[in-house]
Amino acid sequence: MDTAVRFPTTPKAIRARALKLSARMNVEKAFQAIMRNCLDQIEANENGVIKYHDVESLHQMRVGLRRLRSALGMFDEVLSLPMALRQELDWLVSQLGPARDWDVLAGSTLPRITTGLDADAALVRVQHAAADQAVALHAVAGAAVASERYQNLIGRLERWLDERGWRAMQLSIDKVRLKMRIGDFASGILEKDQQRLLKRGRKLKGAGPEARHRLRIAAKKTRYAAEFFAALYPQKTVRPYVNALAGLQDELGLMNDASVADRLLRELNDGNDELKDGTGFLRGYLASHQRQGGGKLRKLWKRFMPLRAPG
Image (cartoon, rainbow, N blue to C red):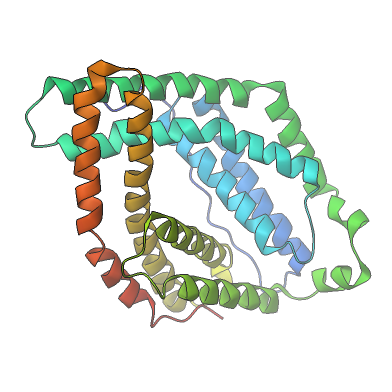
């Protein structure tokens, strides 16, 4: 039975536009272009989140937020976002994240497990309960994005970006580094990200959920950096690198979804005896497949290891 969360007449979710940095840009100009690209993706999905509670619009807004925070991390050696704005970004992430977790459980993880199984009443009850949770949390996310607090956050980020608010807080050496060409800066970021990812992948065999989660975060940040700076390098170098990272990220994401699903199923089970049999079966199924998995991930890792970061 299809219990994916759906809403009628939903708008098209907006993905990030292709970013075309120029090698002639300095670091500051490149940062502004990257941040603008991320903000555009976030703001373009507001209507889908507020008015339609659209699953994909919420997802793309969260992707925009992750990209924006990743960009801030990449440039944090030369400029810094005020702590108050960082805390407001954390608040927004906290408002959107739970709805996305339940979307994945109700619309992806559970259907993937139950496809081909008999429509057992216990499993159907769990699927409906998960879908109900997703719907309720979409309302929370929509209210957050419609709020004055969200509008203030976006307005303050826009002003900070347009007025180059970081300059008031900078040391002289940082101001000099902001004027350097983006190419040398980008190469340093990509190499650092590559080394961090390789370090975290050394003990992939037998890695537990926490280690795989850390590897997933590293792969995601490395991919974002490669995509941000892609226009600075030959596509024949960038495309295989990004594709390999995407494959790693997808497989690690599926494993992380299973870990999140176990937590959410425990939440459903608490105090609800009607769901006990269904959640127990599903958690056992997920645990069994987690123990058996890993082979595909190791193959993807072996394909990635020989690749060099663009530079």
